[in-house]
Structures are given as structure tokens and as C-alpha cells.
Image 1: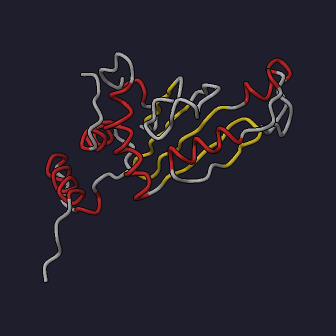
Image 2 (image 1 turned 90 degrees about the vertical axis):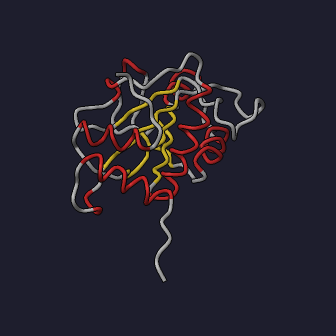
Length: 180
């Protein structure tokens, strides 16, 4: 019995034809998506030690428990002590990463005020896409009462290719809109 061709398989075949790649296994893919919430300002300025709200909200957004990353050295100008919590991070891979990106592109990005495109400057030298959001309360999973303190959220998308054209083509096939 022949295998059914899914929507994901069709997108991979189109991407293979667009990039003129012979082997389907060498088509660029999403390796991981890292969602990070910076909490160091709460620790240093307000000396807040309970991050249960942020952990609960990140779990609702990503469907996965977050881990707390602590500082490795003290920086006196920022009032940062060694081993103080700096950020909460979630790493998504495979199906969860694809589901998160699908929801992010189709539900969250259109909710941004005056959103037109993602700048090509958002890529770093190794062609990893970084998107910063000043507030994470625009996710549809969160209600108005869930966010009491707005926090900065950073989304990092790592692809399997270290090439501008192929990374951009992969993200465009996932409905990302880039500035021309």
C-alpha cells in the first residue's frame, strides 16, 4: 500500500525543487526552536524570587516545562551576583518545534501592532533567526489575567543550513514574511 503524502512532505518536495537539491534528505529543516524569557531584571532590581507565573506562562505557550538558567559570574555594574537566575528557557525540537512555529506565524505575528515583515538583519552570522518580543501577552493561550508583569521574550530558530538563501527559503515555506 503506498504511503500517503502529507502537507509537510509536499512542502519538502516544493522546497527541494526550489533549491534544486537532488536528495530529499539534504533539504534544510528546523533543528530546534529556543524560547527564552529574561528574568534578570526582576532579580536585580526588585529582588523577586518567585518565578512561578513566568514558568506557568511559558509552559502554556510552549507546552513544555522551562528550565532556569543562572549567571556564571558576578557583574557589579548590573548588580548581578553569581548563580542568580537570569532567564527561563525552553528548547523545542521536531513536532513541538513545528507546531510552535505554525502557531507563532499564523496566530501571534499577525497580532503584533504594525507588523509587516521580519527584517533580514534578524539573522546572526551563522544564519540563525532571532526574534525579540517586548511582551509575551499576545499569545492566544494567555488571558488578560495571566500576565501581571510583562517580560521580554526571545525566540531563536535554528536551521540545519548555514546559508542565507536556503535558510530564508525554508522559513518562507513555513509562512514567514521577510523584507525584500
